[in-house]
Figure 1 (cartoon, rainbow, N blue to C red):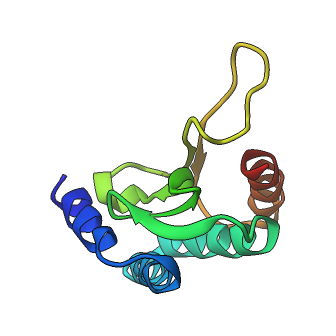
Figure 2 (cartoon, rainbow, N blue to C red):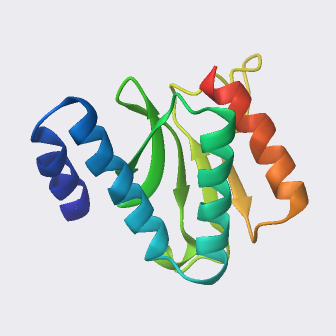
Length: 130
């Protein structure tokens, strides 16, 4: 919660391109602070979002690398090291356009960055970003 409060204070200052640049740098800094498979997956997600959904803005959300549309987080990476779990999670919030009937996944466990993971992420990000 302290991380989120600090993020909100930092985001409150300014607007426009300077604010987006600060938020994008915070996202890159969050990725750089990760280690091992967490960093590889976060770097892969960043590359995929940059290529497949350049209209999503990089930022942090609760300290996690995330990507937003109109200020609302669409996709984020929750590193395994943060909570001591055996896998990191690529998650999608309610603003992601993943609806598929009355039941669909919104989070995906990821052990490492592979070609298979990249292909699936590209598909998910394209759909989620609209």
